[in-house]
Image 1 (tube, helix red, strand yellow):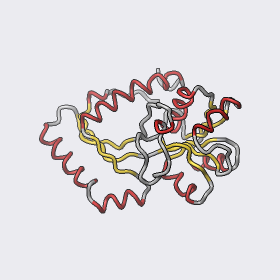
Image 2 (tube, helix red, strand yellow):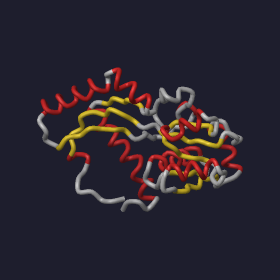
Image 3 (cartoon, helix red, strand yellow):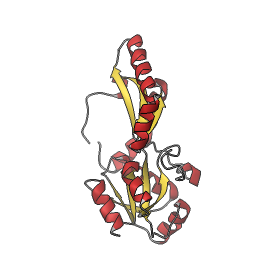
Length: 217
């Protein structure tokens, strides 16, 4: 991963406005229907494979964290994109696919896959029957990608407030909510303080994993 010449403290958070739920899926004919059934199968056959969009992405981090928490060994298989991951999953070349909700939803509707868990802290309104990690008894400190708006450090407070209020009004508009639902995306609001706390938590959670994977110094 490329080094950058700034830190989170150099940015002034304004608000979060969107999140992109991601999920762990299996083929529809797989023997496990949830994580409680996956874990003993993984212990009996160490090295079940999961495809993802590249080391460093949440599609890599979430299953890696889950495997650590659950005490199982999963083998990650990186792909260049979701199309390749999905082809490998449906073709039976990998057992698990770590996918975005956008890619998984039509496959689920077509009855081609089963989704075991959503990586978000709360269930997605577009996949209301898919439980989270914690709902299934696994404390996996993961947060899916969140769209956030920042300004340079030192931006005057009144400007930050005006930007915050304008964008918040947009995401609360019913027309915008319909557009998001059509795209299988989720409107997700966080204020500046919540963003600051989330970044601090994510750095503490993910940096050790990224270092172990050899992605950062």
